[in-house]
Image (cartoon, rainbow, N blue to C red; front, side):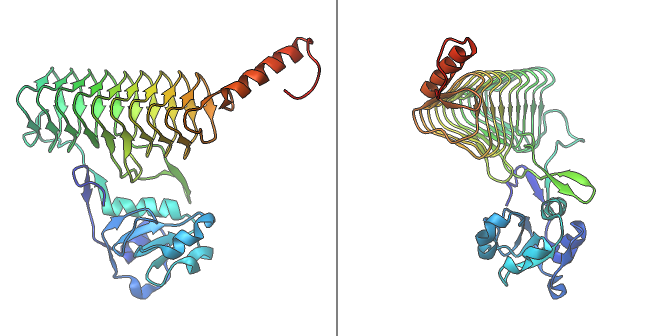
Length: 341
């Protein structure tokens, strides 16, 4: 279930309702009254949850799901177990996205309340600059300073002795102690996810959170997206420069360094003590081993083993990149013999 501090649950909804919402057909009409209360990924759904299946490579996951219902293409309906009701559609992801809006909605600021909501809790010693907005249910720890124009969303937890810069926006987030978030940084906005539907592209719901551990620094105008369903996490004592983007479901370990313009694509896992040079980019669903270093402007498309230094486009081990660069330079200058580097 999405965290109730950040999402309101609108369920239950019957399968008939969800089928209509997603423009799908319920394979067994007799199950139309079955109640569903949550949306979840295929692997995590239970008998009261609805999921979707669209990747034929994950047939085993479809057959093993515990979901009470699942949006599937017509050719995949037979893959689901008998306990899972099939919602048939040519666009399972888009249909699921439509159904989610019937079950969950993000909590928003109370428009009728003051900028400092009466249900927000501030410990002694919290300092607020002018024009700060703090939503219902937010909790701010002792000694934290919040700069002018900052916006703290409903349910957000911020620890003690933190510094929140001017015009920073924090939502759907749990923030530890002694965290510094510079001016203009944005934490907890929806991660990028889209799926094709009958009327074009639709945004995929982002039902997760951001978790920032103690002693983290996040630079000006950097963005850390909330998870699609799981959490985006930044480990203790990690230092993030200005203009860095951390996408949904990314997990960054402890004592990492991310220089300016670094971009980590969705669901990337970064070990402890990893360093990223400026403008480094990492593709989605990769693992960057502990102690690795990624050179400036490197573009990583493969897993990086622990302790290795990679650079270049596409990124590869440093020594290999140096040999290839030296060979190319010799060939371009006509000073070498032809052959493999």
